[in-house]
Length: 102
Image (tube, rainbow, N blue to C red; front, side, top):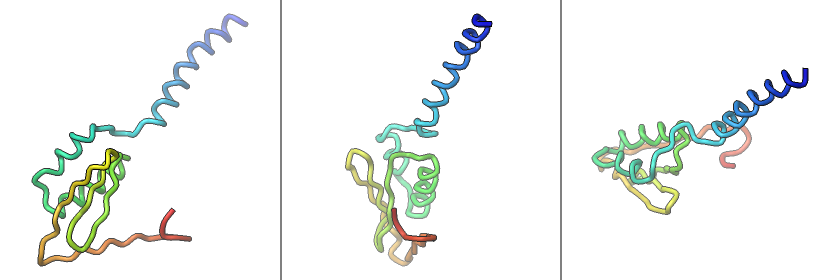
């Protein structure tokens, strides 16, 4: 009985350790320079689509939009800006239940 319990426990512990590791790791982790390279040559619409993708992938990038550009801020503090077209305006809408920000 004790031998069977130890064998089961020795099989369960690695599974638990792997589960803990995976829940603390972003789904997709890409180096900062690789992320910045993905922005090269994109227009504002494409940059916003990529920002949305990165958000759902939990990439370590903060993005916001101003009246003139889409702004990407990386963990290192580096900032990359993609200009908006001069003849277009974009509006960002953030739905909320109790408050607008954390």
